[in-house]
Length: 261
Length: 274
Image 1 (cartoon, rainbow over the protein chains, first blue to last red):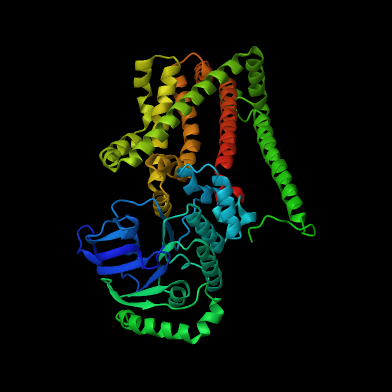
Image 2: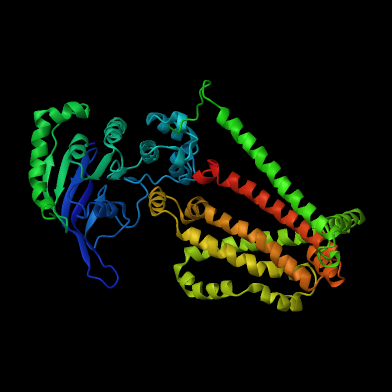
């Protein structure tokens, strides 16, 4: 597997929403970038710049008004069933236990040993003793761990993550970012990650795409040449390399965010 | 933390306090009932109220015992319960299915919504005379009367439940490869279950209501008939005896329903923590 081959590719993607009886809203336009196979690419940008929209285009949940998205060199048309999708809300089914939630994806794919697979994933995210707990019996951090396990359990072809740790307190967020990387290191799935947290973007990614204000466009692409596996965040943030990348991204992002003030 | 371990040195006196409290409530409840019956009986004995119209606890008990001993009461209760259960099951199953079906088709939902609303707003016991005209005085008329009440309750509740499925869960389920059928049985139905149960609780009461109304209007069996025929012969004790039996039946129904609900909805925080 070549690191350079594009797993996900967006070509001149534009998305316009036409709310009933109102002016159309252009979420993003002329978006072109690649996500190389086995890498993590983050998109950062001001809120409302169409970051989530791009994930929806890649997953096939919405069709672009212009341009196209490709996965494995084939144009996305219709909902894909090979993506792992995570967002800030855990999306747990409250009527299923933690284990049954992880099993869901395997169940609809008729995987016979789903029970063992789901248990193994819950173990990896440290929730073995919470298998039979329901959503309301778990903390927000635990719910998001279940979401991580559920996402990886189906061995998705690609991962689309929409601020998956955004609703967590900052300590839990750090722990889950590390957990996510640990899990990711084992199979190196291709990840397209959306966040507004620059630390998170740099800590996780091989490449950070800075988006402009709405309508979102690619403003710049900043490579993150930090070693993998990544050192713990506490060490990383004080390294000169990290700071340099951080200031480069912030320099690009600052003007876009400022327009809101 | 949500971990379920309890340490041995935890103070568990709170638990026994709850037990004592429950016993106290139960005793107080019995006292209230006994006091009511005593005042009633005493008022009749002192001639404050006329036993002919109001009866008395002893007369009611006597009547109840006679009906029970003759086997008539058991027979009437069995008829009313079976009618109500049949009506409840048929109407609920069809109501839930219709609700799920409409939830899948926004077009037909929009077409039928005002019609369902109009039918649902109609006081449907008013249909009972017509139904009796059509179906006679047998079990079909009772089931049909109850059906007109219960079917719409379940339809409306299931529909609102099915429309309220969490969008995040739907998105995730679809992206994980769930088919339309998976979505219906594994997402929409369980997600709508709290709404459906609210409908079932109401539906059980209403199926009893529908059956009783039809029995009162035209029948020669069942608790509704017992009440109506007792009243027609100025046997107030018989009316009360029938009413009390009916109350017990209704109470048993709702206890059973609550047990089933607690089992099926144990994932709901409000039910498990109670």
